[in-house]
Structure formats: C-alpha cells, structure tokens
Length: 475
Ligand code: FDA
Image (cartoon, rainbow, N blue to C red; front, side, top):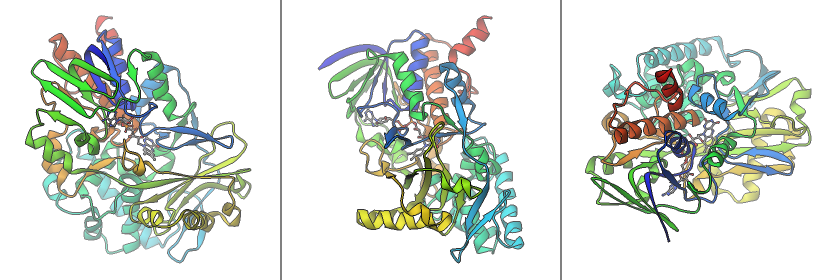
C-alpha cells in the first residue's frame, strides 16, 4: 500500500474531478486523483469498433457550454459540426414516417400551437430561475409538488402536444418517466441550457462534437497531470475525516490531505463509508438523487445511405421505441453511423429481452424511420452504463418528485474538509460535461481560497480558468 501526503485528494477521474485537479495543480497545490476504473473519463468513453469511432457516453457540445469550450481551447482541442443537412423524419402515432423541414413537427396546426404555448410557458419559468439556486424560483415550492406529466396536462388538453413537449425533458434529458420528477426539475433542465427553446432545438443542443472525442478531453487533462497524480484502479470505499483533513483509502494508494473533492455521481456517495458518518441532512439528501436510464444505440453501416435520400438522419418519434435518432458519423469516416436513444420504461422492456430479440426489436425501430437498409448494420452496440458498477444509470442523476426544493439547498455545502463536485450538482451545464467542468473549477476555487485564507467569489461561474482570472488580476 502506497501512502501519499497531499494538499487535496480528488475521488473520481471524470471530467469534474480531473478539471478540479488540473486547476489545483496549476495553482501550485499538491493533489492526487483516485479513480475506481482502469481508465479516465467516467461517463465519457470511446471505443473503435470495426474501424468506426463509437462514443459510448457523453459526446455533444452546445454553444452555451462555455466552461467546456474554455477548457478545450486551453488544451488546443477542436470541434466539428454534427451532420445536419437534409430533411428530418417524424414517426407519428400511426407509425407513419413523415419527412419534414424546419423546426415544427408535422402534426396538426392546433397541436403545433399548443406545443408552442407550452414551450413559451417553460421559457418564461426558466427565465425567472437562477439555475444555481432553483429552489429560490418564485414558484419553486408549488412547481416541485407537481409531476412534469401533470403540469403539462394542467396547461393543455392536447395529449399529443403534452407528449411531444414532455419528450424533450423526460425521455430526452432526465431519462425518467415524466410522472417521476417535478415541474421544478424540468424548469431547471431548461434554465441550465439558457432556455427551453435551446433544449428543444437539436441543432443548438447537439451542435458539435470533439475532435479526438469527449473522453479525449479527460485523457488530455490526465496526461498533463501525469502518473504521479492520477491513480487508476483505486476505488475509494472509506474516507476518514476530521477538523484538519481527511484520509482517503484507495485499493493500492491511501492519501492524507487537507481537503477532499468527492467527484463521483451523487447516487454513488453512499458507496463510500465515511468515518465518522456524514450529518443526517446529507444522508437523507443523497437518497433522493437517482440516476435516469437510457440505452444509447450505435449502428454502423457501410455508407450513410440516408444522406443519398436527402435525409439528415435526425428522427423523432414520441411514441416510438427509439425516440430520437441522429447521424453520428465521426469526422473523416466513410462509414455511416447512427445513434439512437431508448429511455426509461422502454429501456426496461428492452433489457427483459434476450440479445437476439433485443437487437431485432431495436433495428426494426430504426428501420421504421429510415427503411429496410437500416436492418443490417456492420456494427451494433448498446451503451449500458446502468450495468457499470461506477455509474449505475445514464445520463445523470436528478431529484425525485419534491426533492429539489427540499434537499437542493444542501447539495453544494461542504462538510468540513469534504467538497462535492459533479455535473449533476451544476446549475449551468447541469447533467452535461460543461457542468462537470464548471463544478470542478468552482470546487477548486473554493478550496484554494480556504487554503490560502483568501475569499471566494460566490458569483464565480466556472467559465474562466482560475489562472485566467489570476492573470487578469495581476495584469
Ligand atoms: P463522471 O461520472 O463522468 O465521473 C465520475 C468518476 O468517478 C468515474 O470515472 C467513476 O469511475 C469514478 N468513481 C465513482 N465512484 C468512485 C469511487 N468510490 N472511488 C473512485 N472513483 C470513483 N454530456 C454532454 O455534455 N454531452 C452529451 O452528449 C452527453 N451524452 C451522454 C450520454 C451518455 C450515455 C451518458 C452516460 C452521459 C452523457 N452525458 C453527456 C453526461 C456526461 O457524460 C456527464 O455529465 C459527465 O461525464 C459527468 O462528469 P463527472 O465528472 O461529474 O462524473
């Protein structure tokens, strides 16, 4: 067992933990990162299958994600645009595939009007929210008492409009059924992306991808930190804490430090045994943050055949098994890759099937949009983060109904030397790599201020690197 002494120990080498370690290291603090897996990147992960680049976890970046943009700029990493040319396809309730242009689904005019009414309402509520403090929204208490499903139906009796708008947040983002989370949680999702309009605009929210893939961002940070700082295969299952610091017990490394950043998803906080136990408020809070469930489907073909037919590969079907589909061909590859998503209850049903039946059902679901050519991919792969010990769901955690208002205010409080950092605790960039980066920088800034006896600026949003701020101050 190796024993290290550091200013700060970080638990988890996902984007949040690595960004925190990077900032601490640049600020001259000694740091060690203990990671459970044999790789860095957490919920971002890449593999090459039969020559095609497959992003198994997080991958897209949108224009509002300026925290992540500033990190990749600093690392010299570039982005490329998602393929968007051509018509989209909408699968209606009768199972007919309808190719369409523009932003509105090809549904009855009255349904479009109802959808726009609901979207405007969500925009208004989101504009009144500071995503860092959603529990301070003027209607926070009342919005957290009603499920998003019932909230939508309170404001519209057009079932299809409610389903279509619900899809953007329920299946599309939180990956939970709309009856299991509150309207306040839905407003936070919109507010964290700037507006509900941004969320429903796939050309905005799924704008670009990373050259070298999203996991490549974590790899680049880890490389800069080096083997003396990042220790893989070191799950931390015990954390001793006291007034002056902590001892984190990894598999082969223990670290004594003045502070710890727990940079793991909130649903895994209770995997660690805290000695002494955490205060009751945190014990209870952490039980109300649960993972959603989504299957990310990857299908690779000899060519992107849909492009020849004037289709972008972007497809939506609120009632369909595969509710969203996109052209996900990696830059420079001649094969055609589609990525689809199967969320919550439909994902449960798919995991009940045997492998052959599951593959057949899912490919039939893709062919419903793009025709029979979709039935025979050369690579077929399902991302299964729910089966991963160190994640246990996808994409991220959110509060159960009523939890955000009741427990949210405690989520970012440090407990003595223990700080929590995750995309799932972020305001802007909530549940995204951008939020992970912002939270990593903010946790690092808070700790640096504590260690140096300086004050922490509560309004710091994690967009600029700490060194950029220092440069400005000293200039
Ligand atoms: P993350 O979970 O990434 O990292 C935590 C790390 O802690 C992991 O490496 C884990 O192994 C480690 N760990 C856990 N317990 C530990 C312990 N006890 N001891 C030591 N280590 C431990 N985002 C986005 O911006 N664009 C997108 O397109 C998508 N799409 C997407 C698809 C899928 C399928 C998923 C699963 C997720 C996304 N996301 C996304 C979300 C994005 O990937 C996510 O928000 C960030 O990876 C979160 O980063 P964190 O560092 O907070 O946690």
